[in-house]
Image (cartoon, rainbow, N blue to C red; front, top):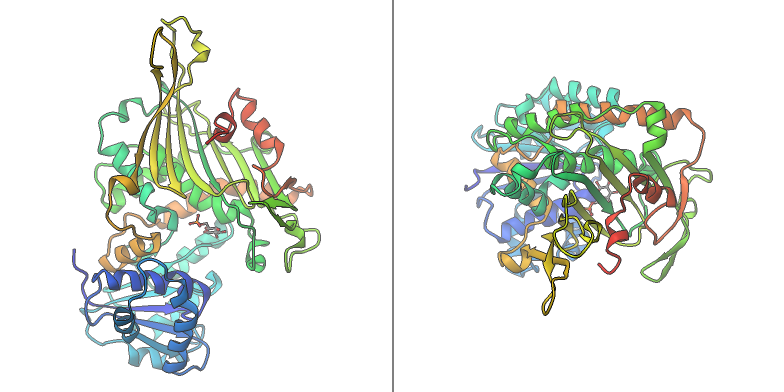
Length: 490
Ligand code: BG6
């Protein structure tokens, strides 16, 4: 569907997100000829820079980060002609005159406001837009995480933004939903007859969802130390993946059909009590170690880290969903920084066969599993038992593999490219609704409260490992193992 003309306004236009992700994503879509000829990107910043100075910053900061598609000089020039720089103080409605003048008056031109700023000023920006008459039915606002740090602050953001924009104008981004494989999971579940009958407690033994990073906190300590892995990754990305795996079939791909189905999952998650929480959640913090053979420092020795920080950089938990479909099926969720490998994957393990007809004991059969790989490579792998060639009847694990890059040669889209196109198209399916956001916070809140009131420290783990040993014990208690423990050669 061709996009209609738009003015995209990036608040925090010279900030990290705009330079690293948003401008490169828009460039990629421009090269692909997705953008209408007169569409513009208005970058808003506090700095009193001229248009030329700002474009110079884009040239030196953003352009070198563009790897694929490679920068073509003529296309880059066309792209930079779309960029307009406006200097204003985002929290001062009286300073918005430059933006009012820069925006085209034609109501038919979609106006998208994207505060790529700290969430503390989202509400102020929305109010200022309203005060300056910049909000019309054809305006949209994009909100980036962290959307709050607990239920109360998330509610506050929702309420304040809701005074200015209708829910149908609000695009809450979770960039994991823009990843190709996540959408492929929808295709897998609802475009095939094969899985749905098996997608339930009778046939599935457990589900593991892991997002592991090799990176540490880097230069984001100011933000990260007040957040931690639970807020930074689990409350949003991991829970969104869990929702896509566990939701009931929506009646269509329409935004509210999908979002209602996800909301139902969030509301069905079994609440933790102080006792169940202590038994089912492990938090850790990385210490010095080696990642890819390189020595890396302890979290507390990273630049600007508080000496006695209690912030977790790793969480593993066993969650449960109280529905007929999922009762009793453990969902193991895990995320961490400075881990042994960088990957994101979902592993759905099926139950053991009930009886072996072969001269092999039942427990020598690896249960079937479906591995949905989000990164670094994108694909699906189904593990099956197959006969080994030759004489006799020996069964061994074999793999059916679908590598999306191999299968579909078409160029990939970064998550932000896909999501920005959806915003510009007015397609809300891959964005979180306000009630979803609140339901996710409501579920993690008892954990946050418990950790706040408890003065113990996260468990230490060496960088370059899979987290504290307690994480293996957590899943081991149920007689299971994390995938890398089962398949060390992988
Ligand atoms: C962000 C987190 O939302 O996701 C970061 O704030 C994290 O801490 C990042 O590194 C991971 O995203 P991806 O797409 O690189 O897996």
